[in-house]
Image 1 (cartoon, rainbow, N blue to C red):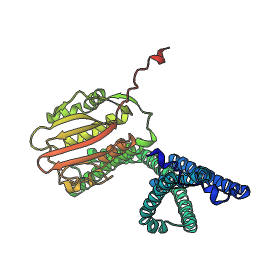
Image 2: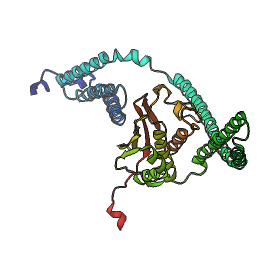
Image 3: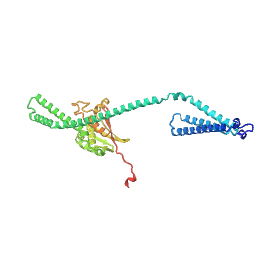
Image 4: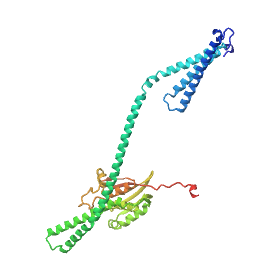
Length: 389
C-alpha cells in the first residue's frame, strides 16, 4: 500500500466535520468503542463454540459470521482513528473487505435458510422426546414382562425335568416287575399253549421291553439338566476313548472302524460329552449300510469354539428331515426296520446347547451322514510376568 494513502494533506480528519466539539467527538468515540468491543467479543464466542462443537452441521457458518463481525468491529475502530487521522483509504479498504465477507456470507446462507426452517422446533422436539420416553417405558415394561416369562419358563422347564426324572425313575420298578413276570411266563409256558397265546406273550414282552427302553432314555434325557456337573477342561481324546470302550461290543460285532484327529481340549461336562459321542457313534453303527461302519471324527478351531464333524458311511436320510432328527420321540425309520426310541439325538442337542454350542446334520440317502457340533474352546490367558511376583 502506498504510504501516502494513509495520510493525504488534502484530506481533513473527521473531527473537523464535528467542529471538534468535545462532547460530540467523545460521544462518537465512546459509542464506536463499545460497538467495536462487542463486535470483537462475539467472534471470540463463536470461534470457541465452533471449536467445542465440531459436530455442528453448519460449522463453517460460525466461522463466516465470526469473520464478518470482526471486520465490522474493525470499521468502527477506524471510525475512531479517522476522527484525528484522515486515513480514509484504509477505512475504505476495510469496509470493502467487510462488504466482500458479508456478501459471501449472505450468498452461502441462501440454501441454508430453507433447510434450517425444516429443522424441528423446540415444541416438536419436546413432543418427540415425550413420545420417545413413552416408547422407552413401554419397552422397559415389555422387557420386564419377558424377564418374568423367562423366569417362569425356566422354572417350568426345571419342574418338567424333575417330573420326567421322578416319573421315569418311579416307573422303573413296577415295569421291571411286569417285564420279569412276562419273561418268566414266556420261558415257562412256551410251546405249552397255543401258537396264538405264544404270539400274544411275545408281543407283551416286546412291548414291556420297549417301554423300559423309553423310560430309560427319558431318564437319561432329564438327567442332562438334573444331574449336570460344573464345566471344566476336558480332553476330547479321552472322551472318545471312553465312548469307544462303552461301545466295544457293538464295534467288534459290526467291524466298525473309527478314525479321529488329535482332538482338542474343551470346556465342558466330561460325562455328558462321553454320552454325546457315544450316542453319535451308536447312531452311525445302528444306521449302517451293507459295508462295515466307517466313522471319521474331525475338529477345527473357529474363533472361540471348536467345530467337530462326525461323518459315517451309513444309509443316510433325506435332508428335508434334518431338523426332525433332533426332536424327542421323532424317528425317521419304523421300529421294525431299526429299533430305537427316538431320544438319542434329542439328548445330543440338549447336551450341546447346555454347553453353549449348536448341532446340525447333513445327509444324503445312500451316501452317509455327517453331524456337526460346536463346543467352547479353552481360552489361554497370556502370560503376565507381574503375576509371578
